[in-house]
Amino acid sequence: MITSSSNSQIKNLIKLQKQSKVRNELKVFVCEGKKMFEEVASQQRNQIKKVYLAESYYHQYTKQNPEYLKGLDFEVLSDQVMKEASETITPQGILAIVKQPIYTLKDMTSGDSIRLLLLEDIRDPGNLGTMVRTAEGVGMTGIVLSKDSVDMFNPKVIRSTMGAIFRVPFFYAEDFYACLNQIKNEEIAIYAAHLQGAVWYDKVSYQGKSAILIGNEANGLSDKATSLSTQRIKIPMEGNVESLNAAIAAAVLMYESYRQIRNH
Image 1 (cartoon, helix red, strand yellow):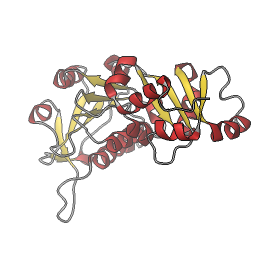
Image 2 (cartoon, helix red, strand yellow; image 1 turned 90 degrees about the vertical axis):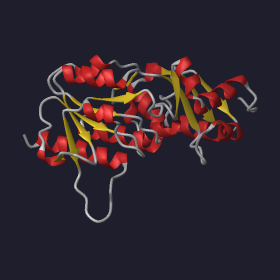
Image 3 (spheres, helix red, strand yellow; image 1 turned 60 degrees about the vertical axis):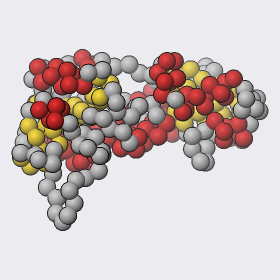
Image 4 (cartoon, rainbow, N blue to C red; image 1 turned 90 degrees about the horizontal axis):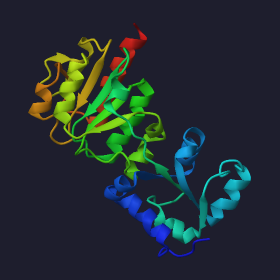
């Protein structure tokens, strides 16, 4: 049992929680909590590199789930060390180091039924996690992000996805604008959420190959990204509200696309 936070494994674990550079160098991330661990253990067990359990949780958990740790490399930590290694205020008692999934743009743009979410400089972890979760709920085929967007493997993003991160393909574009051009060349219509939208969002057809383009929380879409879209769209609003939260706007648009496909 590890009883000191100065242990090299714990130091590494804390770095993985806090530093995207370390996560990307090692090509792993940390998933935390019972639900997230069981998601990855049941679906992508071979991607788990190491499991850490708090001492108090270990006995209770293995009694209830004797098969879940079978064949996995794991360590038991004192409750205090688990608290120090955890990113949550009240740790559930289980962490796992997991290999990062790797997707390409081609993975998301093959086939006839293509519905993408395109994100330019999304910075808030909660917003990104919510978008990933919603994207799974409506059956989006993938998410493309600009390289300056928040790290998908940020612990707050991971928690916000509620497991959807294990099922929704995503890709960080080194050159986001070149990527938008490539998507258009694949005959995928790009609908840009914009305050100066030319048409209401529910007046366009998302059937066939389509993509929804969402911009930065504070600044919206850049002029360059907007210029590469097929059509600007706008969500109608009453009162003095100028814009919606980025994750809410994305959800409204994704669900309209889903509604059209379901009713087709």
